[in-house]
Image 1: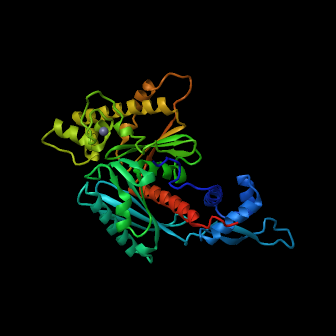
Image 2: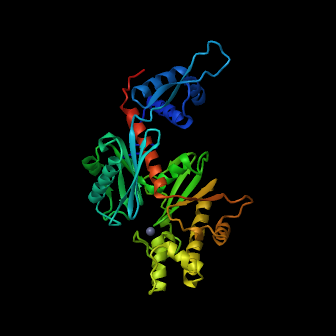
Image 3: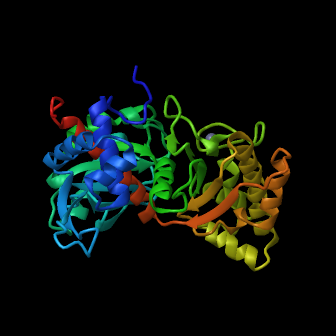
Length: 405
Ligand SMILES: [Zn+2]
C-alpha cells in the first residue's frame, strides 16, 4: 500500500537536502553557497556537497556574479549558483472539454512553446486519451527545436478524482472508464516519465508559485468551469487526502436528493453551479432557446430575461452556501476563485457575499479574503508544468549516486 507523502518517492536525508537546496535556488535565483547555507540553517560543507551533486546532475550551474563589495580592491568575483534552464524540458498539459493545451517549458519554467489541440469528443477511453496526448505533444514539439524524445517529463492535469502518487484516476468526466491506472499506458506511449494530477490541484500549485497564493500559508483555490474543483494548500503544502479523493468540493452535497450530477449522484454543488448545470436548467426552462454557453445566459440576464437572472441567482446562492461551508471547515487566509470560464460574475455578486457571510459561524473577525482570478487554459497548463518540473527534479535527484559525498 502506497503511503501519501508529499513526493512519490521516498527520499533519504541527503536527497531531501539536495531538493531543499534546489528549491531554494529556484525560488531565489542566482545565489551563493554561503547564502544558501545561512538561509537553510545548514553547514557550508553540506551545501557544497549538495550543490556539487546538483551540478553533476545538470540541474544547476555556476555563474560569475558581481563582487559584493565594489570598493574592494582585490574583490574576487563571487561564484553564484543558478538553475540550468537548458538542461531539461518539461511539458505541462491541461485536458479540458474541447481542447488539450500543451505548454513546453525549460527547467526554469520559461515558455518554449504553447500549443492547443482540439478534441472532437469530450470523453474517451484511457488508451485514446493517451494516444491523443502523444499527438498533442508531437505537434507542440514540431514547432520547436526539441523533439518529444528530448522531454524529461510530461505532467497532465485532468478533472476528477486522481491519486497522483500512482497515476491512478478513480473517476473523470474526460474518461469513459472508471478506475484507470495510467502508469502502464504512459510507459507504452510516452517516451519519458509522465504524471497525472487533479487539475484544481495544479491550479493551486500555479497560484502558489506564480499567482495570488504567493506568500500565503493556508489558502483554497476554487476552480469554476465545466465542473467545480478545489485545491487546498495547508501550511504551505498541497493537501491531497489519503486516496487522492479529497477536495471534491464540486461533489459536496448542498441538497438532499437534489439535481442529478455528472458523477451519478444527486444534490452535488456542481449540479447547480457547473456550466453544464446552468445550460441544462435554462434548456429545461426555455425549450425553444437553448443557450450554448454560460456567456449566453449572462447576455440574456443582462438584457433582462427573468429566467436567466433566476438561474444565475440560484447558482450564486448554492455557491455561497458551499463557500461558507469551506470557511467553516478550513478557516483559510484567502479563497481564490479561479477559472477559464470568463463569466462567473454571478458567483461574486454582493448577494453571494451576503450568503457566504450568513453561512459562516459567527465570530468577531472579518471573513477571509475572497479573490477572483480569471485564468485561461494556459495558466492551468502552467500549473501542470510546475508540477512536472517538481517531479523531474525529484527523479533526477533520486538518480544521483547515493554514496556521493
Ligand atoms: Zn457529483
